[in-house]
Length: 335
Image (cartoon, rainbow, N blue to C red):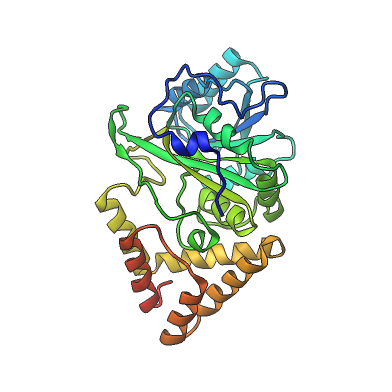
């Protein structure tokens, strides 16, 4: 299910960094944004990311940083920015030291962090100056009681900040049937509302999932929320040797991920995700509950019933190559 905000959907050109706030953002009662940032040995690129947050043309934000036990200069850098910005702008906490997904979910579920919207932030990217304003322009058009998730394309850059490409531009609509087998939005671009956060908190910070961004996409789409993928690249996504999760924009990266799918790694991921979804089963729409049940049942069947069952679910990936790999995984019982 997708939402709409025509100024975002129609604009593909890079807007001027000094542009005024989009008209659908209220200036009377401005929405507060909590930036949920996780760090771990991020000394090389952290300052550039924090500077890009400070340069946002949307000013009503606060950074909540969770460090997972850095032994380099990450904490020293964060302390420098706390001294410069003050506690009203940035707060630093200790993470659970259980991996990046657990760290992000621990921040998401903290009861002492409250805002109107929540934005995930990695430690090594660079945000475009209008990143938050574009996200909020769309989110402000969604009823507060409807879970809503914004994400966008990314501009890929190398470790020196030089552009090397763009993330894929997907044509098929976001949906739970897609989310079951693919994450189409990077966490570093995601901004979501309180209703979406309520769903994530309901599932709990201790839920075992593959990645926090894939989980957010499944949860919001599965529970009848709205997901919007902005074609404008709002983040400069840095590609370097220490990336925990890299882009799949080039052919080699896509083939590598397809190889993991065919080797059975994807089956293990689906085991984790489908088990995690049981925690929010009562919040799924009736239609998506049926999709989940059919998907879980089909994965356990012999070949022909498995293929028929998976066909009934309507699951799909965004590209022809991805769907061919999905079919191969189904044939080989690697799904």
